[in-house]
Length: 108
Image (cartoon, rainbow, N blue to C red; front, side, top):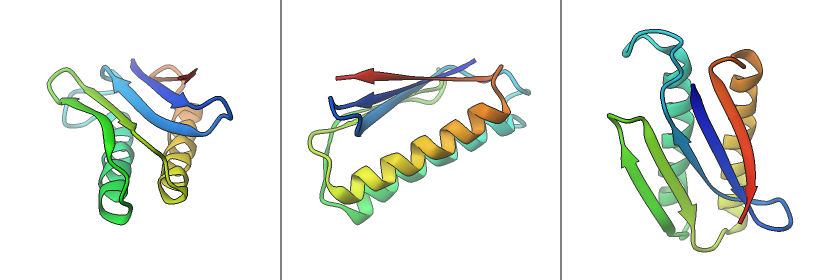
């Protein structure tokens, strides 16, 4: 199961996320759930890097283990929008594939 943790500030605004595991929906290379989650997460990280001046406090990746951890030092309006878009996409995937994706929210 893919486990997603969305890190939020005390006002509920996202500051980062962590994704770990594999969905188990299909074999590696054919797993549409893992592919969708990975594409959303990677696009979010790349978009924040390209379109904002915000810098990550944490960026850790281990593709073999299916692990990505990403947190921002400070969150601009633009990065906040991109992180909210990520959360929306992840929630939509989790709604369709509940047995393969678990999302939780953690205040930091």
